[in-house]
Each structure stands twice: as structure tokens, then as C-alpha cells.
Length: 360
Ligand code: PEP
Ligand code: MN
Image (cartoon, rainbow, N blue to C red; front, side):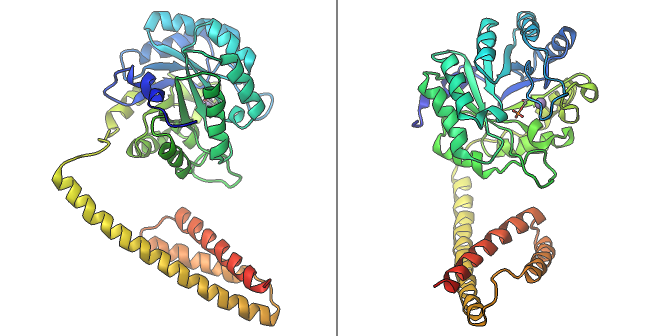
């Protein structure tokens, strides 16, 4: 797939003066619930109403969605509010039904994007459709798999494509439900600047208190829009209760978000930026220089260990370094998360260097 300007056309057709917004409950629960939320969202910045009809639950026994009847409610919500309707599809049967009920936006969930068979089945079922199709990132941090999903749809003649960044699963507990790994969507955006990129702060954070902050971060990275789970009674939602916001809270988020310009051509801005960027370039060079020197020392250590026939990994020493660096990093305004990630990477490179020496 090459970057194609046409990919952005569907978004331009909305003629928005603000980011593109999809909002609505995690799941369609009852007809009243769907209609009430849709009415509260009309006449706002929301273009598309979302509601899950088929819910992929991690373990059986959870609420698995209302199924086809929910599509009738969405149809009614569209007639009454004029909002476009969006839902998740995970197989050909879902696609067939969603198209029958004239759903406008279909998205592929994170648990489906990981599976090339499922993606191909969906692409075949959607072939040539004029509907908007959005691909969520796979649960694992794999850019090729994400792009592969988009390519299967593109090859099936679907032109109104976009991607949703919903974060990635980790075994480690973090402050996020799914860690953002911003570098992955940024790389995708660099490769395909015309593929609309939408943030899903609800599934990234799992916590309504963090929705504004993560959405702002995304807008600062030039994302095109957001999909935010919204429910009039979030605490009693049938799925994803902790992360849903009320329609009023959502409207407050729209007020609080700062939408920034993509660029500024003024001389003042350009001069300031050139100066700062020169500074950054020099510092980056220094960083690389230092890292190179550090690896030379690692080579020396490798030689000493080889002569003494000692194993490379010395856990106590490594944990000491990490503890010390986290504290030092804090003093310099660096987060623990960053310091850990950086030193793990440095450590890995260092082990690689020592291994080369030891096995020469
Ligand atoms: C959802 O949007 O409700 C959903 C199930 O999302 P994801 O595929 O990102 O887990
Ligand atoms: Mn959800």
C-alpha cells in the first residue's frame, strides 16, 4: 500500500473545523439507552455514534452484546438524530448484518486485527464497500500486523479507511489499561500521513479521569480524531464501566481540549524553532557519543569476564544501577517509566557487546 491522498477524502468531506469525533456507549444495552445517549450527543461535535453490538469478552460469562436487535436500535437512533452510526465487526456474518442495517462506520477490534484469517474474511465480506472502515491496532505492539490489516481492506477495494490507536496489552501492571507505545502510531503516521489516525483514550486508559490528558497528547501529535466511550450512567454500564464518561463530561472535554495548528509559517516561529532544534541536534549527537563510549567500556568488561570465565549477567549489580538511576532521573525531571525503558535498552545493547567479546 502506498500513501494515497484519496485516503483522507472521506474525512475532508465532513468539513469539520474541529477533530473528528465518534462517541457513544461501549455496548448497546437497551433501546432506551441507545436513544437517550444518541439524543444527548446530537448537536455537539460528535459526528458518529458508536455502540458495540457484538462484544469480544476476555473470559466467558461477561456481557457478549445484544446482537442483531441492537442494529435496529442504531437505525432508529440515526433516523431520530441524524448522527452516523458505527459498530465493531469481527467476522463475515457481522459485516453482512451491519451492511443490511446501513451502519455507516465499521471498525475492526484489537482482538480481530491480530488474526490475518479473520481480517481477510472481513475484507472479502466488505469488498468494494463505500462505508468507512477503521482498523484498531492489534493487542500486541506489532506495526506490520496493523498495516497488514489495513492492506487487506485496501486490496479489497475499500477506500474510506482509517486507523484507531487503542493501546497495547502488557503483562506488567501500568497506569494504563493498554499502554500507548506512541512510537508505533507515530511511525504509521510517518509512513501514511494521509491515513486518518484516531485516538481511543477509553481503552488506552481504562479510567475516565485520564481521558482528557491522553486525548490532548494525541492531538498534540496531530491525530485526526477521537473515539470516546460515553454513557449517561457510566458506573452502571454493562461493560467497561470505569472508562466511560457522561455526555456532559464529554462536552466539557471538547471545551478543555486545545486544538493546535499543524504548523506556523511566521518568521518568529521558524527562528525560535530553528534555534531550539539546533540545540536538540547537538544534544542528540552528544547522547550517541556517550552511548558509544559506554559500549566501549562494556567491551572491556567483556574481556575481563572472559579472562575470569564469569557469566555476563550480574543481577544484583544491575538492580543497584536501576534503583540509583530512577532516583537520579527523578531529580532531572525524567519519569520512572522512561528511565527504566532507556536503561533496559542500554543494558541489552551492553550484553550484546559483551556476548560478542566472550564468544569471539
Ligand atoms: C470497544 O471498542 O468497545 C472494544 C472492544 O475495543 P478494543 O477492540 O479496542 O478492545
Ligand atoms: Mn469498550
